Length: 487
View 1 (tube, one colour):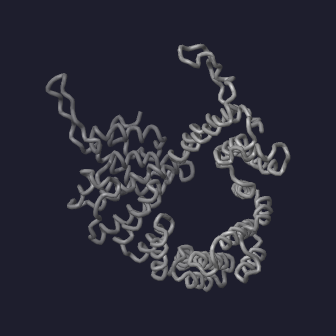
View 2 (view 1 turned 180 degrees about the vertical axis):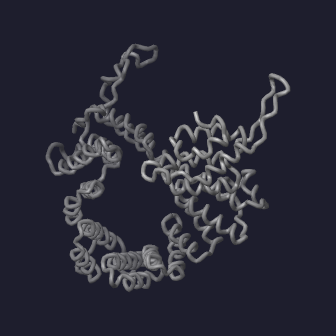
View 3 (view 1 turned 90 degrees about the vertical axis):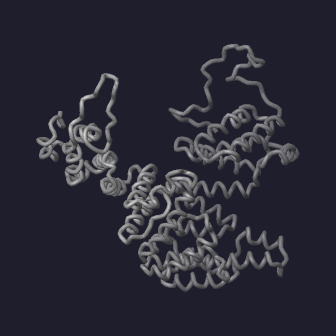
């Protein structure tokens, strides 16, 4: 299937095909010879190895694509070519310019399954060499793709045909057909319907086996949670039933109960359920975050700090958790509670415990936490506002100046003059004007080491703040105290 894009090329275009000194000098990179089917299988295996040994980001996709393009360029076997097209469709599903082709390609691959364009022996020849999914697995993937791009009704039709009732319920929720969703969940609970994967799992286990019992218990608890999500007036009763049915082993029921109490401000009741959820599934960050917020509401500062520390341990780029850690440190400072080790450093770092005995230890820890969080929440103006205040408190005036400039960038268009904190601005001007004048150097080779947080060391940042962000009208009262500040 062609891409038909006015910007993105269909395949890599090589800028030069001049002969070199290596063995393949005579091969034009834009017109390479066909590979044997077995070599194509090896190429696809190497492509999947890149995915399995690399993190999930755009560079990994770019590393995988040359293998796929090489196989697609010369179709030699139905199964191999289908697998290559499927891998390309998966890679292209994350890019805005190719997501349409990706979905249509996946639809075409599903539609070609029952056709007679290849023999059975050809399709099965390399079945053990490539991980080609079944037709039903590809239909499920297509339905999930439809759901991800908002084509809910098409996804609903496929899920109903595959008897994937939980996904059917989600689709009905998306199109606001709650009654149909409730009817399906009740049918599942009463045994009038069953999911296809559950039926298959039951067929593989003995009726009285422990595995069969676990499957049935987990399934029933999940269904009660679904019913609670749909039936708001009786949701608490359904969540409790799910927790009871699972013998206190359903993380989903624990999360639902914790979220129910948290949403209603009953934080003391929410904490035990959220703790159970984090114990059952410790790598999910959302229950940890809610638990930390509940501890904050209950003013359990040490527990809140430890809980948010788990959040950033799971996802270091969670800027909101870093902001909450900073807030907890400031609260601990008010209560006189030691903040502990620095969460922004490793245990073997000399700075890890460097602030333990400092008078401003907690504020310094809050400053470092906010600085870390702003790396991942650069557009969050509230965090910049907090960072300004904490920076001034710990004497990091150069950082306060930088943060004030960023805050003006984010808020000036909406708030105008209100986006500038005049108290902080006055503090910055005072730090520049009250510093003693520089001494003359003793010789031409010597250089002054200036403190970036006061006097002439701070002057360039303050001057840049006054000139670059267009706050002339707001700061005219300061210009008489700082000659040369305005151009």
